[in-house]
Image (cartoon, rainbow, N blue to C red; front, side, top):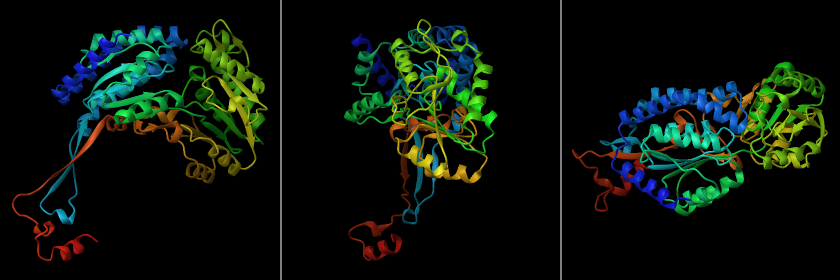
Length: 458
């Protein structure tokens, strides 16, 4: 580990920030445009790196990583000037003659710790608004996707001076050292256990954090759902990136009257997407590491495979699988799966489903398939979750107008679009007081001061 480089990068970034170099809007716009051009210039290498590390197809690599990021840059670049403007607020009756204003200002030097499942997009998407808000940033990519990590290091070095944006590669040792440093903001995407470590480290220095974590996100299919369409959208959400998506449907809660029909449609959707032998499909992704693969293979024994269940030890692929006959106490139901295995449980009444979901930690996402507006309202009102969809999966993350984030154990803070700008900004309140006159009743020597205070402050 190059301790000297870590320390040097942070010192230079802080000096650069303190000189006000990142504050001008023109500079921020130029940095975002440079990033956009770099992504387009490196596109072929990004696709190759994502295939090398995760087996992603070109379509999946572009739609979920490259295209997603380019759209985020476009959206933010177009609107950041308005977001950065000071905002006037109303004046209280006790403050006659004054003006209140809220001024967005960057925190300073931000640390962005990225995960391995969408290693390109989830490293650079937070960076977009760190830059837009006027911060400098250090990126720490995941060591589990080394090809993408090395590519990110080259792309960033080719695009930014290290005092603006820098990449620190490495593993646990480097991450631990970075968490000891005096950053002004930390943005972490990853698992709940590591999120606790990050928050503990941040607490020692009182560094504000955004934690994008995970959890067991339920998918509820009511008896009146349009089952064929529901199955297609569930298969898309669950098996994209081989299930290695923090907001993938983790388990299925389906009304007992429609379970068999839904599973038939689900199997048909999987065959349409990936063929009859997904583990042999070159465009079907692989599990990121042997350790994660072995863990997922053990889960296959927690129920009966309705379809799927095949695995390839050499290619680290597991076929999209639906597990029936799963006990709520089975290991597959005790932790986030993060793979292409979908446990299936049934229910009779929506109330019991709500109770079952609420008995677990608050999930990052929830998906509900039903045409019944009353059921939709009941689930949304009675279940706390980070975000989600009615009659779809994953797509709430793809609109920049909806904040994305968790609640409880699934995370804190949100981002995307303007929410990203807010995440990387401190909103400074300033009161501009008049000197043309003075309101004397606030002073200890004022006559009738208490009487006037009671009139205005009641």
